[in-house]
Length: 533
Image (cartoon, rainbow, N blue to C red; front, side):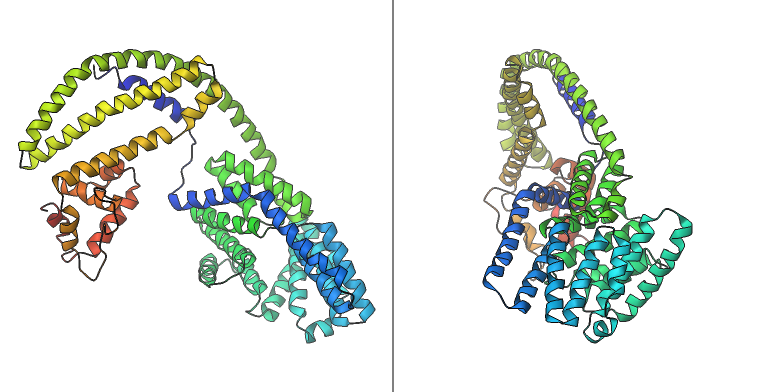
């Protein structure tokens, strides 16, 4: 009889496996990607908040007639729009220039010219941007601290020309100019500017230095600084990701691209790189859903921002991802139809299997009561094992009831021909999560019923001035750290087996064991002492 019941369940699991994703992320990376996805879901709310902030700044124009004050309002508006809306940026940048020339203020004229040059550069209008910086009053710029921004913008203009020019003959002079202005930036930029670090990172990762480890260490150290603006943190995550990717650590690169992309969306802005590069890594990891979502959002934003360099980055990747995503969508639809047909067959087999199980339930419960009675009289290690057998036989019986209820729910959806409801039930983790929660509850209750003072005795093996475990738990419950050592007390010492039972990663089990061992009075024999509690 034991062969009848697992067979349908096994087929279901195989069908689910065939429809499952072919990639796997560790918990930290999956958490970062999930947070990024949630931020993407807030697109409308974040855009509305930005526009409300812009409207608040713009409303001050009606109350202000003094030219310098109006100039500052135009400057704030141009800065808000510069990576968001090119037309609005140019509108307010030209208003800045007009007012600056009316006031005949050379410093403000330079400032307005730099704003226009930045926007032209983002739009890929590189020759127009070069013309603007060449018209700058460099003497005034040097005296008033504007030379740093001028040199940096010029470097980025040539960087864009290099990326946008496929002809190597024409490209070579641009490369030379890019290198020249990068070296100028390294001389004039000061450490209080973001551009100082992004230029250094660009040289270490893309330039002649190619010292990826130094770039990685520099960005990791910068990210430890408290109170960094979101845009600054975004740049640091991006360059840390670039360095990790160059080293070959694509997992860490994905993590920091995800963290950087989330900050870009929270700012929010429409001209960025992290999400574009992340979509490529997701694509090659087999995560087509996320690759498609990130690449299409990046395309829409770059198109609205008229960010030519980003469009150039997107152009080779976008059709590749869209093609494979559409292919996957069609395949998933076919698999869904096959799955539903197979499920109907399995439900019939499951009904037969459950009938056989129900017939034997009375005998099973009788045997269970007998084993329970005998278990109470046992005192050695074999008695403990039998006690667990009793509990898990009970769990088996109750698990059958759960499966019966689940079968009835699926049967109702099938009878109603409600395919969407059926797919929703099959995709839901609620049933499996509930079974895991119940398993842990029964394990905790059974173990503490046999070893009621296990937690207190375990803590006596730890140094009083160190980590104490289980202080804030509900009565009759254990956490995963205590369950790890409960299994060790029962003789299960292999981390792989513990990880499978507790539904944890092996690294988490390992960390749980190391944490308590490091806090023990006797580290060398700690687990041996636990097995004697």
